[in-house]
Image (cartoon, rainbow, N blue to C red; front, top):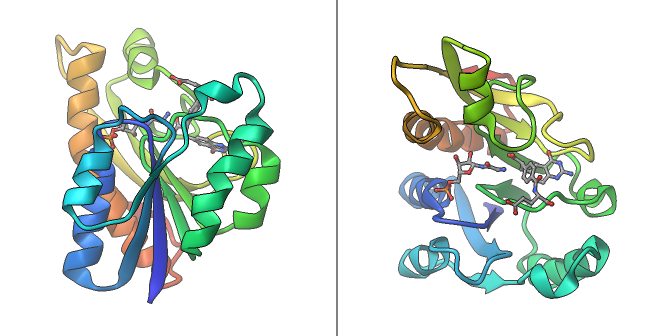
Length: 195
Ligand code: NHR
Ligand code: GAR
């Protein structure tokens, strides 16, 4: 059985969907939920789901990403994951951290990559007048939001959308897309899934 660790920074709704799908489908074991933010709502949700949790606050490390990542690696390595899922994880990871997990680390990003890597994706889509937004699951590589695309869902932009209403609509598609891609990924299927 593949072991899956999930990195979060916030509410953890994608994490919950991944854990529930693994528990329902029995195709992988969620072994750790790890947050860089002690106030992340997802930690209590993971505990309720019976998944071990750890927190490594990035703030004491200031600009020293390598020192933060050295601490992050301790609980992560102890959990010995086969696959790592970033799910609303908000810290850019250095190449030195990413490289040992090459081909084994996934991220869900709230845009139709390669459009809008980085932050504030929904506002950027609205500012551009896009008729469509969406979300993408991709492999994490040293270059931000640029790894091979494993799945994508297109979501209509509706009249009167704000960044918040668009984000909420996209999030419901994230919840369908990420578990579907993870299931395929642990079965070694890396063809792009379009929802
Ligand atoms: N790291 C690597 N090397 N490659 C990727 O593809 C990554 C990554 C780390 C995170 C998620 C990503 C997203 O889906 C992700 C993909 C955070 C930022 C960011 O700028 C950008 C992209 C993503 C996550 N973070 C700021 C930082 O200084 C902090 C922002 C904040 O705390 O609000 O790290 O969008
Ligand atoms: C999701 O929309 C995810 O795509 C996005 O943050 C949200 C987290 O929600 N990720 C990023 O913006 C990464 N930079 P969740 O904590 O409820 O899963």
